Image: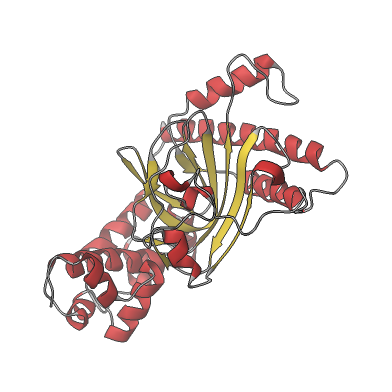
Length: 335
């Protein structure tokens, strides 16, 4: 029998399962389009998921950690969780998600919150390189969470219900608290593990709420992106197809020191300037592969890539498949 203090690493993370398979038996047939089953062929991931008998804190429906080392085919399938908040923290990486009719870019150092009952999923054809944590928790009305009073639980529930921004920059403490809760689950047999994990959970929830409130205060005083970063993005979009485009020349044009501007850009967008440009080119490449008859090599050169081989390598890095494979699956026209 499996020890309750050890994670069941064979289980699929629930957020990667189709809604109609969440309650199905683990031995049930899986659709050939299930992104998790497709991804296992590449073995490009690590994950630990704690739920049921393996979770330390019964107030949590799930606690998980996932690390994709490379872009893998498939997408985060539509899902919803009645009565539960889903709180994510991106330790590194960048993904595109949607919640109901909203689209979001979730990047390094940010928190992403899905409220109870909201339909959500991935806005890409692949599972992008990233490392992130997530948990699900409910705040029952008229009841108290363990180690909290009914009044404290009600105040926390009310605060989460009033959240305006679901995707916002977090302080480093949020990541540190997720890591500490993860470690307590990994070594669940350690003395006082439940007490420590619960204390860290309370600190995490309150820190997330405080970071959200700081985000609201900051947004009322200044734009979410500084003018220099906005100008860099504008120039990249305007000159995306220029094969001679250089990051240093853009930095000089906006009169920002190259090193400081690079650091500011990464802080505000979650991506390096180079990766932001590549990602923008790849998004345009996907559109052209989808609705044009241009050859792959022509698209590569038109978008400023020095060779079709470099384009194919970059495309696979961001999308998890070769350009030709993407066109066969998604293209409305054939070359």
